[in-house]
Each structure stands twice: as C-alpha cells, then as structure tokens.
Length: 405
Image (tube, rainbow, N blue to C red; front, top):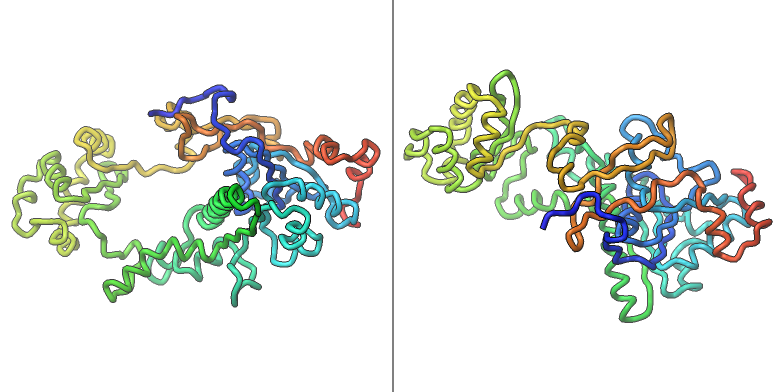
C-alpha cells in the first residue's frame, strides 16, 4: 500500500499517544531518540537552557539539526544551575514515562536527574542515556560521530587507502538515537509486564562497531582484511558508478546471473553474455579488472537518461547521482508524502516554511507527519509548569531566572 500524502492529522496513527517523554538533549543523538517517540505520538518535552539549545544557531552542516530533529516536541526553558530551576526539572522528569539525555557522564547526577535518583521517585521511569561509549575503559572520553568513525573502522572503509573519510551524514548520531528509542520501546513492553522501568543505554562507538560488523566477519571468515570501499573486492561484478556521455555519472548494477543475462540482452552485449570466461558471478568478480574497462568504454557512448530508462524498463538496479538539495524535486518523495512542511523556529528564516524528511516507514498506510512545529525556545514553559502545579507568580519567577545562578 502506498502512503497517503498529506493525510489529515486526525487519521495518522499515534501508537504512543498518552506517553510523556522528557528529554535533556542537544545536537543530534538524543534529539533523534525523542523525534522517533514524538513522531509516533508521544508528548515529548524538550528541556532547554533559558537562552535556548545552542544547536538552534549552528552554521554550515549543523544548520538543519534543530528543525529536523525537534519537530513534534514542546519546549520548556529551565535554568538548571539555579536550585529552583533544577527542582522544576526534577518535578517535570518525575512526571515522565521516559526520560532521555545525551550529556557527558555525571552531568545529570549533579542535578539529581540521573536514573538512580529519578527511579526512587518514579519506579516506572524508563531512562535512556545516549553516550559516546557504553561503560568501560573509554567511557570517560569525549566522543563525536567523527571520533567513533575514525576509531571504529568506518572512516577507513569509506575513504581511499591512506585517506580515511567520515561518512557524509551523522550516521552514528542518528542511528544511536534510533537504538535508544528501540531500547525504550522494548522497556515499555517489559514495564507493561513487570510494572517497573529500567535504564537503557545507547552509544556512538558501539553503534559504529555494528555498522562495520560485516567487514569484521568478512575477515573472520576469509582471513583477508576488508579493503576500503573504493578498493574493495566487490561481491558483484557489475556494481559501480559509470561515467557516461557528456561526463554524466550513473550507478548501474547486475547482482545475479539472471540480471547479468538481462544486462547483456538489454545493452546488446551478446558477445559478453556468450563469453566462456564469464559463466557466473564469481567468475566475473575474479575477472572484474578486465571486464570493467570494457563496460566503461561501451557505456560511455550512452547518456545517463537513456541508461536509466532502459534499466527501469527491464528491471535492473540503477541510480542517478544526486545532491541532497535535488531530492526536494524527487517525484517519488513528492507523490508519496515523504516530505512535510515545517515552520523554521530560529535564524534569519524564522517563521518561514521549509520541507523536512519524514521517517521511512508507514503505519496503517500513513507516513507519520508533523503535528507540532519545531518549537521556539521555551514556547511551552508556562503551560507545562502550570501542569506541574506551579502558580502564575512562581512561573514568572522561574522564567525570569538568570542564565547562571
């Protein structure tokens, strides 16, 4: 079933509706966890400093962090450095089903917001910590996505020999947050059975190790170290980017013997199909250094559009080489509701509309959309404090606390 684009908000499934999540997060990893839960209907409350999450004002590659990872959330601005602010944060956290955080080890404990403290008040609390490393020899280190990509083999596999290169997006941060959410969902199921919460831990380094696990096992099985992807021994003979007519590029693949036959038939390569040197995929992989130059020479005479049309017609894998900004015009994303409008909360374009990406799955035939716009700093402070029993005068006092006690 295709997802219904622009479905009314009332028809979009919210399996976590009624669940309260309080997150003490910044940057990408922790906010991703909250976004997963928020998109599925949870009330997610983002606790920010009085002057706002610094992620709101990043430049360059960080400019999209806040509006992407903080949709469908409420914002409360609290000064944790002031005793009254810390007390308000504890009261808020005590009201939560799930508390999520991604600060340095020991930070939350300073404010009585660690799992041990909160579980004493609310034994049903599920506490999700997002760190650089799971507890062990490295857990004192400061980690970044790039740090764990370098030390965890991913940058080595992505770059050319001698030139380690981080992946082009925040893969560990995003996946680490997703694994935190997966752990939280599992803990929710167990809480439904036992009535008790638990602490869930997710970490960048361990996430990265999972990503390169296939290459670790490749070595364990074959006894040969995996080469960086640009120099890898491919599992398939035709599985590469080809430069074609007018210097355009296109990715083409044939990953089975049946696809190889279709590939040769579609392109008129009867001689290659009949060549006894290429009876099966493994033989073609072994002779890939000789086969690929032949294919490159022949394919160079055809345009990328011609090849795309041909490969789509016969059902072979292909892909144009696109830049991220070009995806805004992708006909499939536009037709299936894969992009949704958000109102930007900060910066020079505050108040203006932009399109954001949604999670890549459907529920009951619907994409999970945007119910709440990315919040402005402290947008929901008054209503949330009122819900905790604070009087109007106390709310104004808390809102007026200086950024530093």
